[in-house]
Amino acid sequence: MALNYNLAKVYALSDNDPEFVNSILELFVTEVPEDLTLIKSGIKEKDYKQAYAYAHKIKPSLDLLGMNVAYEEILQVEAWTRAEGKRSEINATFESIENQIVNAVKEIKKDFDM
Image 1 (tube, rainbow, N blue to C red):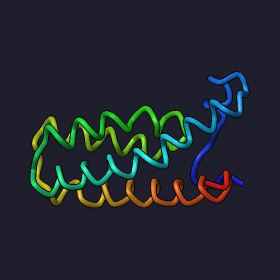
Image 2: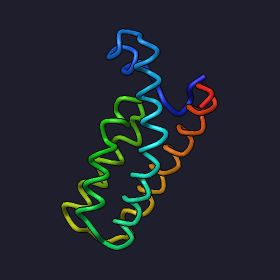
Image 3: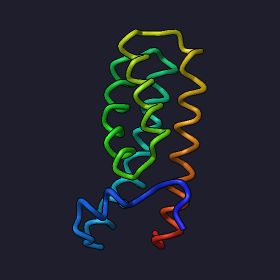
């Protein structure tokens, strides 16, 4: 039972095609954690362009998988990069996104035998 993600949009987009759903989930579990690492290093190094690029890249995935809180928080990361804000103000937001993604990846791997 999905607690950390919601596949309603994925199923609607795919016309309930299980192969399409699996390919979306495979991409999520393989690419998003890597992108998260690049966002983290962008924040740490104040590389605003890098942090923005990867935050922007994962934003549609968070929306598609019904991760509404993480989606709203990734918008905050994008705003932080545009404002070139202080690192301390974004750390808690990033940590929340990271936890949500880690939990969703674990759950997807378990639910779909990946």
